[in-house]
Length: 176
Image 1: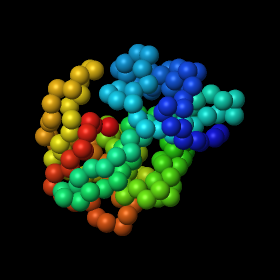
Image 2: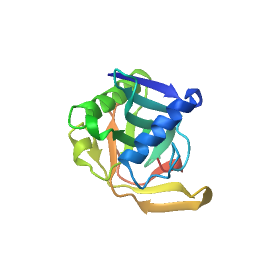
Image 3: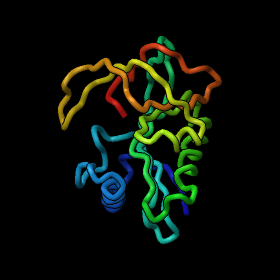
Image 4: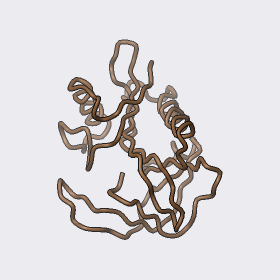
């Protein structure tokens, strides 16, 4: 197995097709034929089997967020998934370790994600946090405004030694 990161603009058509198929396999409600839910990420972390088959994926947004007055450089992780045939073998944890190492080596302050099943992330050193959030609301393929709401399943892994702050989290863009 190999884990790599690839800028979005460098992905080939066959890679996009493989990502779309994996996302559809892991998330049946995912828009068919798409490799992104709301917006293209900056890059992808991809795990491939020895035969080149895509078996794991993380879409990564690199941006600033405002955590209760503290500006943080973050990797927003989205569409974290592992092919059903490769689950329960440590691949998901390896993908998170890879993203953590990459973030630490590049001065990222935190990893941020929204989890529907937080137990896996809690086991991998993420914290469940409760913040009122502000973000650019994108629905379908349209911007509909700015929302201020609590986001269920918000998880963070601080990497800069600073504590996560209570208060408003402004995502300074769309939700991951």
